[in-house]
Length: 461
Image 1: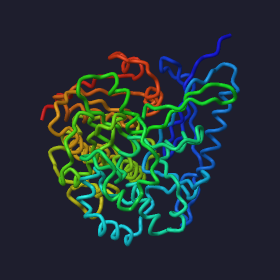
Image 2: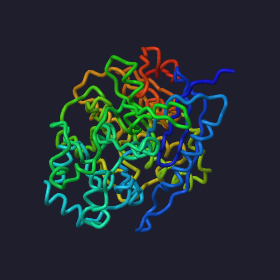
Image 3: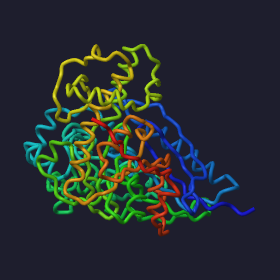
Image 4: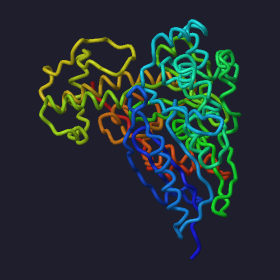
């Protein structure tokens, strides 16, 4: 029996760790999910357990190598961004993998802006809304001034995707998609590291930049395997669309964050863009992707838990709620804001406390919640579109299963072709494609994603 030739992809999210096998036509052969318990850093802050992650990767890899049914041809890695692994001269890991939600010391931030320019200036030049640890370049600055004894020992700092690649190759590299995702490291207008990186001599700790499509051929247990250099998950999720679609489009990627990604807008960011939480990601060729994001899924979960408690419903009840046109039209007659959002910093009218007394039922309050979230969603999508000639919007991720959200999207963007795309493969597929030389065509998305065109709602106001 001949062995099936496969590519392994490790797709590492903050919550779910996923392991995929793809055949030569990018069809999924195997998929495994796991959640690994967190550990804590030296301050007691929760963080990824790097040794546990390494062991899980190694166990899955060895199990496939031992499996008589498969011949592993290639491996690649897609992971969340804003996370550095710091190595010493001998390749030992020096610090925990600091969590990008960890608060950063105010005095360190003050020192940074005092030395290198105001918040808005740095944000605009690096296309990175300022957010402490989420700007991973600041983690290096923080280490330099908070833990100088550790900083002195660093030989290389690797973004998480490149660290996972390094585990297999022993070679340290950097690549564009990880450098370009809200790290504060990259000056988009000069297409080089920002001046502050050189002034602080941090460039010496960042390995040579290679293309995201680069791979390293290695021999493992007498088998030749191509190892990819890894890719940032948002850029990876966008890749199948870019490679198969020639017409301009916007991808709305929904989940904990709702991110509007526009690969066809290469304008420099303005001060107003930064204030609206716009940023740039980087394509695999180093070109910019204009993006705007807000913490929609996070807020949605917080508010739905409160609705369930208030109306005495089991958590999960909200998943059965269907769009009710009459209810929607009635609610739209009243433009008030009823929800106090807790995790969203976008400009909106602020109220001190959520008012649920105005809603007789869970369904009514839920529709109002979706109306208020949709107001922000419309705003962020329009910011990302800017002046580019986009006619198609693809929506993927968790909210494609939310009937109220999808109906509101089709209503508010009825002058666009709005398509729902279902792919549980997410960023894993892009990671598999980026190290293959196989060309794909327009039919690719149709084959690999359950694509549905949303019909515009005709509402009688």
